[in-house]
Amino acid sequence: MEEKLNKLKNWGCDINGALDRFLNDKDLYYECLSMFVEDQNFAALKLHINDANQKKPFSYVHTLKGVAGNLGISPLFESLSELCEALRNNEYDPNSGLFERTVVDYNIFLEIMK
Image (cartoon, rainbow, N blue to C red; front, side):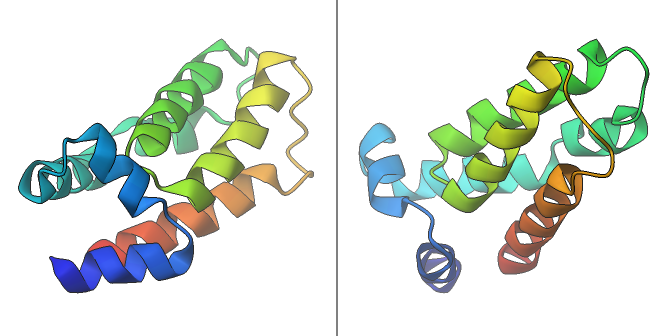
């Protein structure tokens, strides 16, 4: 667990801030990180990111952004935030690279958590 937390911190995650929110309960925090790995919102986002109606992808991104923020996964939170705003304003362009950047950050998170 410590090795993964250190890797997340080195990637730019706010582990200390997240642990403050978790009352320094590392076991609970790690359990929540593990639950986030299993969360299906990202898979659903992949299916719906190019929908003409952007309400569904916005909902998935908004949920993921909130969880990533609370867990202190800052790099993923930042890319999700940019994607979320584009979807919120109906300005998402599939050629913008926003989704691809989010996928890269999500995959880095998953790789660290393996």
